[in-house]
Amino acid sequence: MRPPLDDSRILVTGASSGIGVALARQLAPSARVLVLVARRGDRLQDLATDLRTARPALTVEVESCDLADGAARAALVEAITARHGGLDILVNCAGLGDIALLEQSDPAKLELMLQVNVVALTMLTRAFLPGMVAQGRGGILNISSGFGLTWMPVVAAYAGSKHYVTAFSESLRAELAGSGVVVTQSCPGPVATEFEAVAGNPTGQKVPGFVELTADQCAHASLRAFRRGRALVVPGFVAGILIHLGASSPRPVLRLLYGLLGRLARPRLLSQDR
Ligand SMILES: NC(=O)c1ccc[n+]([C@@H]2O[C@H](COP(=O)([O-])OP(=O)(O)OC[C@H]3O[C@@H](n4cnc5c(N)ncnc54)[C@H](OP(=O)(O)O)[C@@H]3O)[C@@H](O)[C@H]2O)c1
Image (cartoon, rainbow, N blue to C red):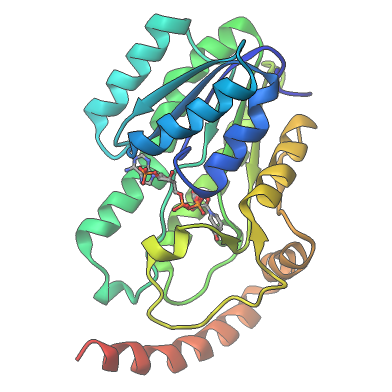
C-alpha cells in the first residue's frame, strides 16, 4: 500500500535544517498544504518564501514550535486541526544527538533529546493518526537512524532513542495493517547536516567521505521508499551495507567489538574532561 502523497496536507518537523529541509523541498511538488515546523522561524520563513515562489498554488505555513514543550506541541496540533481538519502525511524528522560518555553528558541536553526524538514523535503521531484512520488513508514517515538498528559506545542515549523510533515504527505499521495508513522509517548512516555541531564530537573521529550522504540524497532515498510503502530504508549504498551488517551480526560479536572500542575511547574522553 502507498501513502496518499498527491494533493495532500503534509507536515514536516525539523524543516529548518539538514534532512528536514531536503524532505520539505522534495515533498512540495506533491503537496497541497505544507506545514514547516522547527524552532528557528526565520529559517522556516526563508524556505517557505522559496517554495511559494517555485509553486504559487501551494499553501506553505510556518509553525515555529519547540517540540520539547508539551504545551507548544498541543497548540500546534490544535492550530493545524482548526485550519486543515488534520493531515494526510506526517514526517517526523526533527531530532538531535548527543555524542558523549553518558556520565559526562549534560542532563538538560539528554532530556531535550529524549523529548524531541521520542516524546514529540510519539505524541504528534498520536494526535494526527485518528484523522488518518477515520479517512482510511494516510502516511507517516519517521526519520530514525542506523543507530535504531545497532549500537555503539559514546552514543548510548541517542541509540536508545532511535531504537525506540525503530520499534515504534515497526509496531505501529503492524498495528495499522489494513487501515489505509502507511508507516515507513528511514535509518540513515552519516549525513552532512548540522547534526554533528549539535551532537558534539569529543572523539574527534571524522566520518569517511565515501560513507556520508548529502541531505538531498538521504531525503530522496527516504521518500522513494515511502512512496512505495516500504517498511524501512537505509539510505546510501555503503552505509546500507555497513548498517545491515551491524544489524545482522551476532550480538556476542558486536559486544566484543564495541567493548574494545569503549575501552579505547573511555580513557581518552575522561582525560579531556580534566
Ligand atoms: N545527520 C546525520 O548523520 C543523521 C543520521 C541518522 C539520523 N539522523 C536523524 O535525522 C533527523 C534530522 O537531523 P539532521 O541530520 O537534519 O540534523 P540538523 O541539521 O541538526 O536538523 C535537526 C532539525 O531538528 C529540529 N529540532 C531540533 N530540536 C528541536 C526542537 N526542540 N523543536 C523543534 N525542532 C527541533 C531542528 O530545528 P531547530 O533547531 O530550528 O528547532 C532542525 O530543523 C534527526 O532525527 C536525526 O536524528 C541524522
